[in-house]
Length: 206
Image 1 (cartoon, rainbow, N blue to C red):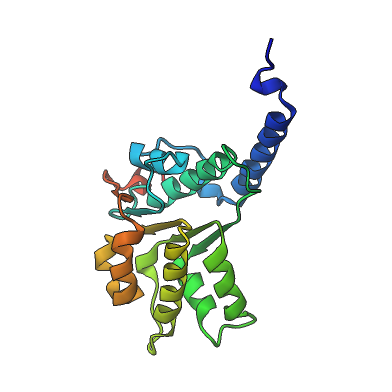
Image 2: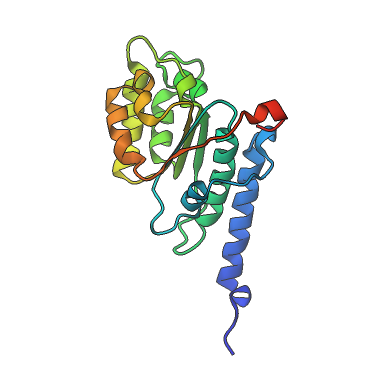
């Protein structure tokens, strides 16, 4: 009789690592978004990381339709899915609200080291940027240049991005710059999902 996967020491060890990683990430999710929600099937497909799943995910739609909530829960599922197949260690996930990220990337950011941050943003296993359209760019174009370095490096190495925005990728050029907008067509190929519905905040859900 062959052992079941539950009796396989390696499988059990991997399951323990997976559960620990998912729990650790869940602790990082803001309280408002802790509750599990039903995800759009296309979002679930990305999170599961199947063979035909897109590399990156861009969630857009009107205010209050659940983009941020869906993104946090999708990333949580993505973390768990990384422990199937060839184990490469616990994934490193960088999560940023766009306004905070743009501030941190500025050369005069207080107490920060933009160069070190840049490397972390380029090499993390997953980078999630929330509410992209809310950010204000620096007048000298510094943040747009840095964003291009981040997006392009992640693109050529097929490292996934998750973005939420009130507008579709092609309408973000005034925020991210023309070069990032052009690159986005390839980065998010097959992974642009519009979430519809009414403003959930009006009914008490985010």
